[in-house]
Length: 364
Image (cartoon, rainbow, N blue to C red; front, side, top):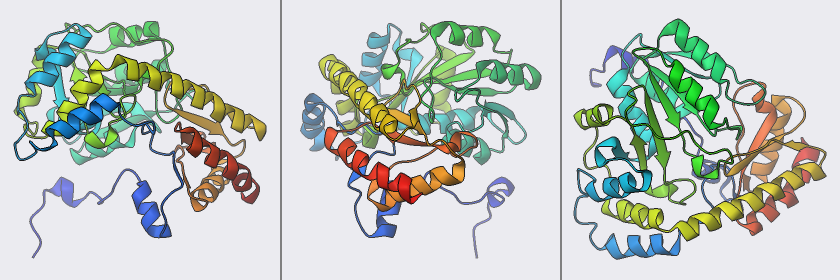
């Protein structure tokens, strides 16, 4: 006899929002030669991060601090806020899940972009929310359309990624400030700033007195710690304090937190990563150009390449690359699915992509 599920859960499909490279490797019976699909930082964490995590590894027998005191204090100092304005969790994915648990119930209206981060949609569905999706405009998030939908629906949550995934576009601080000013009463704007360290335009100043916005950031991208699962939110103290009502208080391992604190203090390595990322983006754009294709401008650690035809063609290109041992991904919604998305990485992996890209195009 099976357990008695809630009506909501009983009606949901069992799914994983992403097909992981490990799944594809198992299916193919071989490891990828280049892992350029998950927007991980292929340059890896800093030496100081590795050293800090190694030193604390022997303490893994202990639970982590359920209050995350030290890392919250470090982040508060870094951003010029108070520790009461910081919540730490197991990646932005985990924090989005907590926020949905706090704000979403069956029938709740939620506004997002069609083609934006699928894990957010996954969490909304898990609590019975109703997603209203607006299309991208000119291969970028459409702030005006998002806020128009918010004006119409008065949703609990509005999701906006800046810079965005999967297209790599960004909007400047003035645009984001205007969005914040337009948030309706009773709504909360989620600013997913996972890629903000790579931004060329910068971010809108942090205002923890505004209860209508929460900002999520991560150590997964620029800091090279995707596997450690360390994300955090910045917001008004009342909102941040509400996470203590429902979060997993022992979610953070001592090893992950030690690594995050070391990474945060290593500005020199962060600058090195940003420089290497910029060079790799330029190289990927050049590779696209060599085949008569266009790389979209990127404010992230990946490059979206317009394959020049429709989604079926781009999927064949993707399949050719995966079959050749090059892990990349693509947007899942038309017309953006005419593109593939290639993460930056070490020169050797970019070289492998360059070698296999032409044959994949020809095969497609």
